[in-house]
Picture 1 (cartoon, rainbow, N blue to C red):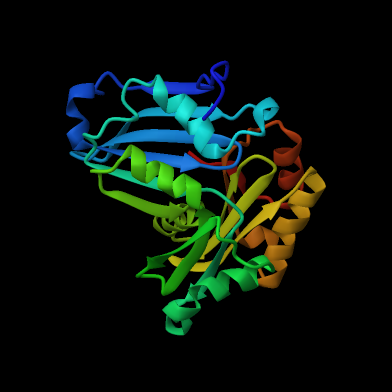
Picture 2: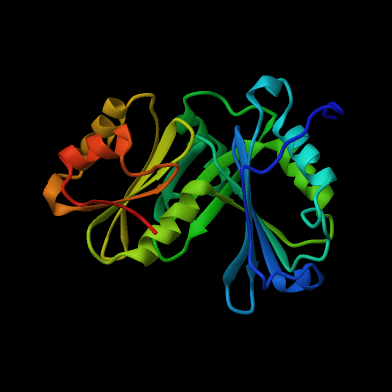
Length: 264
């Protein structure tokens, strides 16, 4: 359990006047969890409008605590997160442990082996391996998450329909629906970014990169385009997440690619 002195406040919090804590049975709760942060949003399923969001950063000084301990600290004093009245709960796992396998080549009995090959190390007993199918795209996203974290969510929501998805699957779905032109969607996290390239609703590329400098960022983006034989002036680049204009990352990308914009 977390120490009594541990306290985590949201770094961002928005709430629509429409949000009604008495109507949680009409809402979907989406929780995105990474090693360093927790983000949640509430969607009104009557019209699929997001009506509340909160973002939390885990304190670096308390790195000995597990993710589930950080979440316990957030949940124990929260007004509605721990409610059992949600229509559904979606957990989005944001980590480096994933791989995409073509549906035609996928064999369920090899699920763990696919991920071991991608990670380059054995899957441990502390990991839980899942597979998410993108029916229309013909790919399956195999990923792992911390078993303790999955058990924690199961204990918090014992009577609620919980679904799991990797962050890359969320970005893939968004990218495929958002553009018909040749577009690279780049989502920035904490010292990493995920890049998804689509053409006419078809997935062409997806990968996640760790980086420390803007030069590393540009190198990886251009490397991916070179592998796909895409010229920089032939593609739109849309940036999301932890990125702003007039930053070194944005300015350097803009030097090498003419069609760069912050996504909405």
